[in-house]
Length: 143
Image (cartoon, rainbow, N blue to C red; front, top):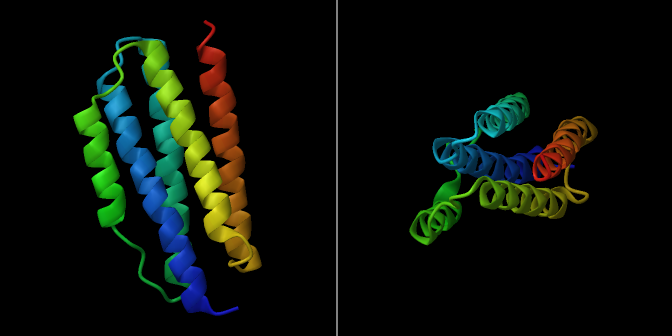
């Protein structure tokens, strides 16, 4: 397996983590419920940790980690701003769940068979945390 290809795949994944961090920032700024805000902050911190671990792995492979989410994802973020941030707690939670699910699906697609064992372990651990985040967000929908 070629380190250059692994770095490319990890950087694609890292861009998604940056998008998640930015998305959660929007949610946090627009939520009035303090309990939900605290949960969203915790999830955002998880994504920041994922980004740090991934960037470190890229460096250890001799690559240069991307520093933002890239042009394509920036366009998507811009569209999100134009579309408007969901207003209610329920809308924010639904949007966060949808974003987590899309992120998991995209990550599984990005890394399918293209990573070395250590990189795959890092990404899979992050994906497991993301799945737990979905469960946590879903449970808040009914509080």
